[in-house]
Length: 222
Image 1 (cartoon, one colour):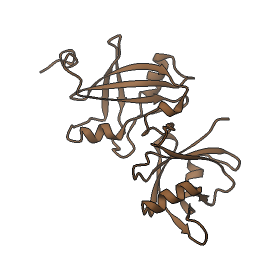
Image 2 (tube, rainbow, N blue to C red; image 1 turned 30 degrees about the horizontal axis):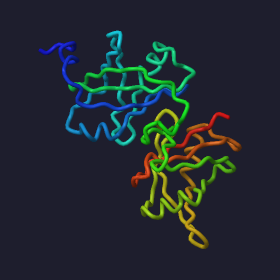
Image 3 (cartoon, helix red, strand yellow; image 1 turned 90 degrees about the vertical axis):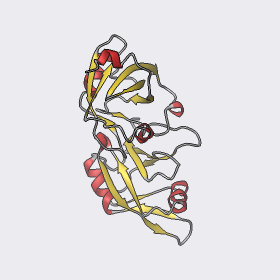
């Protein structure tokens, strides 16, 4: 049986960068990384070695459309002492469910965050708008997002909220003036699950502008 240390002496076969977000109990995984290694048998627990050769075990949620590192992420946060800051996290893959992890730079500019991440505002690779909740009965998308939805002929969206919870939402359209897309029943459920209230300011962001129907929605802390 090959030892863990021997495996980690091998060449890195893949990697991705993600972000530590204060108060979020999970890390987001680049879906393209999982797509690249779709034939690998990723287990529910990932074993990550840091620069001090300490091992961290973190749970993978098993969702290839909205992949997350969950249980164990808070322990990693405490170990690195990064509770209140946004830090880049570099994860390298060696095969057989073994990884290395490295804490990177403190991130202030969200435009340099990889575009798959919910907090990314990378120019020409993300589409987002900020919205003040005036109703929990429906959500109307702005003109740019409505055009994007219409162009890609989406009839539903996947709303991704806090703690990785997802809701499939049917899209309604009004073409009396400009393409105007909105959701109704599912928005009320989403607001309840994420404890949104009237007056909250939220960011609504497509995971990618490359024909993605995944939408991240989170509260903006003012």
